Image (cartoon, rainbow, N blue to C red):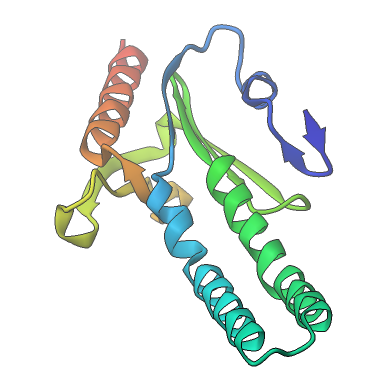
Length: 181
């Protein structure tokens, strides 16, 4: 389904950026804690508004006005921000094929960025831990070759980051071996 720039059908993105001979090697989403951390401010604001509503009820203020006011404030400042965080988490993913790595970043209903990186442009892959390695996610770093400016792409909150990096490194190695023959 497509709603403005929000594309929920991953198959359409795959068909748009991949050839028929490519095969999917790995597809992974980002860890759920990335959504929690992105929406933490919204959760705190919801708790504060709810607490203020309880205080208003205890003070016996006119609840119609209190509920209406808090609902307007919550929808104006919290709800849309939380929806944006949810979309950013739910529809972002990493797709590794035999020829490329496709990074899909769905920031909102209005903005989508799909970044296909050809395997031949990946120089190395490395990982880092996040939060002292307590959780089952980490950082995957794609080091691009110098011909592309030698940049690196940092992907945070990747579940099983070491396994994802190993799979990407394996695809890069296989591609390089196939290209040298």
